[in-house]
Amino acid sequence: MFLPFLTAFIGLVLVWFEKRLAGLILLAITIGILLVWFRFHASSHLNISL
Image (cartoon, rainbow, N blue to C red; front, side, top):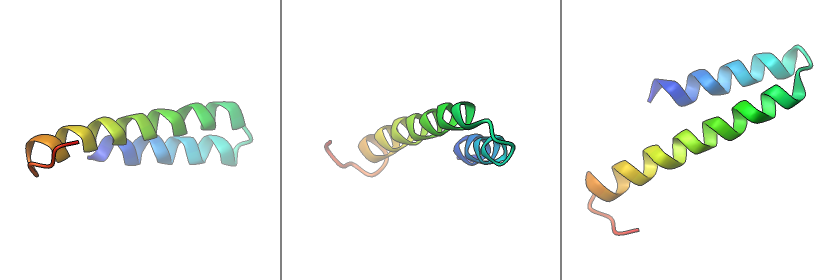
């Protein structure tokens, strides 16, 4: 669960230094990681059918 926070933080730093496109790409990567993480944990560990 550390990886989404790391990518979000790096994206925030990039936006702070006016690298907007790279920040948006890292935001998309962060959302993708969270979706995969939620899909795996919600379906197998919580027994929720998605």
